[in-house]
Amino acid sequence: MGRTVGANADDTRRRLLRAAADVFAARGYDGTRVADIARAAGLSNSALYCYFTSRADLLIGALRVHGRRPLEELVTRFPTRSVADLLLQTGAALRRKQDPDGFLAVEALIAARHHGEVATALRDYIRERADWLAALVRDGQARGELDAALSPQAVAHLCLALAAGTTLIGPDLHDVGDQEWTDVLIRVVASIEPVHTGEQIGSRT
Image (cartoon, rainbow, N blue to C red; front, side, top):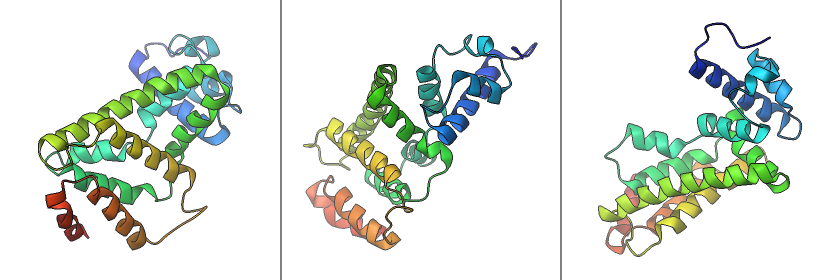
């Protein structure tokens, strides 16, 4: 097997990242070899190394492309909706059962504890996600939707921690009712809104 004759480089890269996402989700980082990903993508090891330098590169690349980003998807779909509403809707969806791609972040977090190359790459990825979230918070603050006194980076950290936590402790391990979860989220989101709008969030249920 080798690089497909005439294959577009972008298509080959996408095929490799799809294969990497599938194999890492099924076997974990330590249980996956570069050869496993190359085989799943229908390529040779040497062809794979034309696009990615290591397992860590493949893992973080797969996370960038296939990792779940429900909040970003909502922002794209509903650009005029308030940040508080988007956070509430995203939080409500976090506790739902994940598809395999949803666990890529978990595999990366676990691998980062034992592999320095993963930790370095994951740190950069998380910084990018935190910066994006912080910018979203600042936009909400500028529009008067969120409390201007709060640190955007701290709110971003809370969002990332909540996303990671609900992926690790999904409904298969511990579950609560939809309304119970939503009631708690309403309190959390209300706490980062300006005081004069705090009562309005109750109408979202």
